[in-house]
Length: 366
Image (cartoon, rainbow, N blue to C red; front, side, top):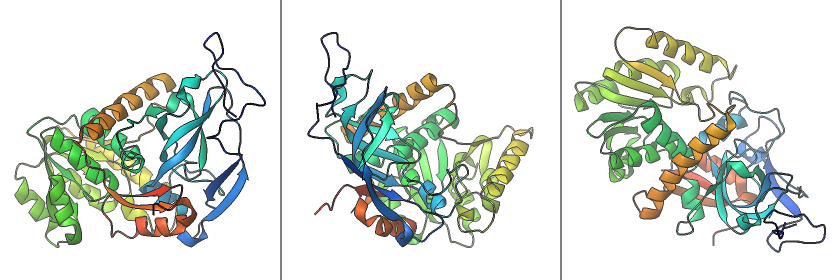
């Protein structure tokens, strides 16, 4: 299945050349519809060869993020119709390349943002979407910084444009994005206040943030006490009616960055209505003459300009991986669970009892 490099430096396909790393079958987890975690199905199918410009990655780690939790409920804003294979991101090793792709990629490890399809033993991706992962870092650890790292980095540096000395508020500071955001903000010299349940306060404090119990009846008073002038940026994944408090907590000329509607995850009804209501609020707030700004972060924004999108994403993720390789970032791997136990992994990720990210791996780590 491998495509060797020809004399002229281009890749050549041969019908009888097989890579020892490639597989003739693929195991994948399928969402058949709105089901409980145990209803996620495993199936094995024949492998599809890499087409022009494509690469097959043998999955070494794939994450379970909030997006998949919404997809399981049919609540993600633009998810594909059932049945489909979830999986927003992965780290894997290149085992086959298609026409027009250099054979030098074979055997190297890459991260890729997929949106769907990553919960599989082998994943077919476009070569242009790959970002190389330093060999000095662990695959599961690197995986926790793919969608989470891109999200946190771009919210901090491209939207909020934080500066050393700023004070920011991170809701859900124990989560995958939250724990990454805390670390990146501290590296930038930014003070962080983070909400989390009391159980996770020690972990949040260890990351460098001041923890506050999100269940506290006087939550907003506590948050105002910790930053009397308001927050230079608030990062809110909760949405719902609480987004109003997030905007009110901003300092003059502060920035609200909304990146989810977690509060409506289990609410029956349209998946679009909460998002559209949120967009309406953000637009209204941006029209107010108070110097504050409000944004909704969409990791896929600018995708239509493919080259610019890929360049920006690769540049940001490369910076995150460099910090990881230097030891400046600590991966928050909540658990490593084999793909064959995907239902168990999803239950744990949705339990609210863990710090960081649950990661699927090809086989039992033991």
